[in-house]
Length: 154
Image (cartoon, rainbow, N blue to C red; front, side, top):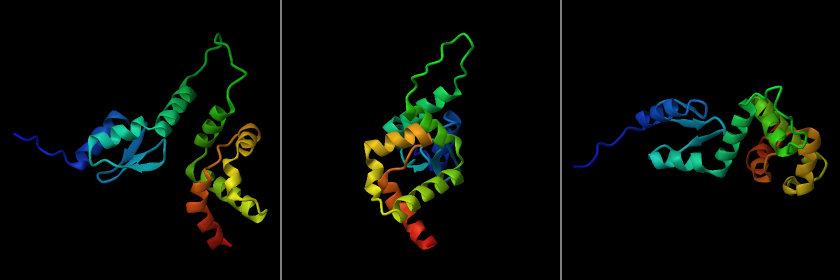
């Protein structure tokens, strides 16, 4: 006898109950708070696949490390990697501030005739991680979303 099909709203509710700090949503949409994307929820394996993705796992571990409060007796590591601080810095910003940072970055590169492909350069990423303490978006993100908004704004 076949199993009864689970409705998508009950699958979403189950996921929200099981992972309240990772996901939010309503009866039709499941949203990952860490990755800031909508997650497919037609099958349970879709949710498991998203949770197992490299991006989600990295952001989950960063969130857990940021939540850990150090005791006075614990040694403080001075050589913390800059990528940890940059991801923590970008997560502290709200969505509006982060989008404004991305928009300003896009306008800076475009107005100064710097190719957006330079965002993928290791030197550029190191500079932003070290001095700005913010995670740069990928070139493709700016090309798809921000560049269109930038030209509309001008």
